[in-house]
Image (cartoon, rainbow, N blue to C red; front, side, top):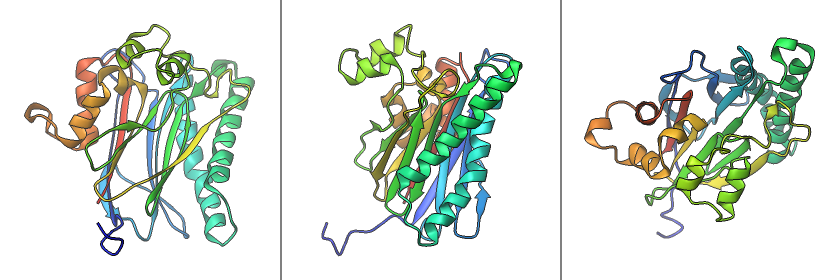
Length: 278
């Protein structure tokens, strides 16, 4: 394709679903979908489609942890903070003051970490609570992301492949990236859910992952909690988004993913947000 024929994506379609699973009483997962412009922030519904040229979008998944209802509280703090803090930072960047995406997302993640840690310190019933966070900020031609914990971000290019963009902040995740474990071995390892860092919790020094992914029309992204990974291999995620079998084809992409993951496993809360560029 010549440079003159190259086209940017102009539309975005999204879907988001969370399920308590088959065994848990509380849902400690939370997800968020926002539309942003220079005027303010707008919460989006669980699914929809809109233009990409005049607006930015934010999609996030957070998985809470802690005793009693603390985990549920922690994940809600994370998504609520994004809703309140991101618009002011976005307006600062839009007003002509140069703010790099790493600086903007870094300040946001640090603020959430401070709030969750502070509440856990001052309230006995919230002691030790924490949360993961996987966040995507969608702008024309680029997705900027911030990530802490073992929720995940996947990029599904239009060529039919799938790539995990985020890195699991676990020792098992590190061994997998080093080639010391296969995907099957990592999935079944008894220490796969032992986090090395999270928002709040016992994390003293936070070291989030930041990055940027270019996209083209036809690309898709999946943001999910680890409950989805317990029920689906990467190949299954790709198939259910791109070419679902007849028995699983009902519903939008997020519904298909969560329904199948809960059917296959369902031991944990399960959440997925899918957005597709066209």
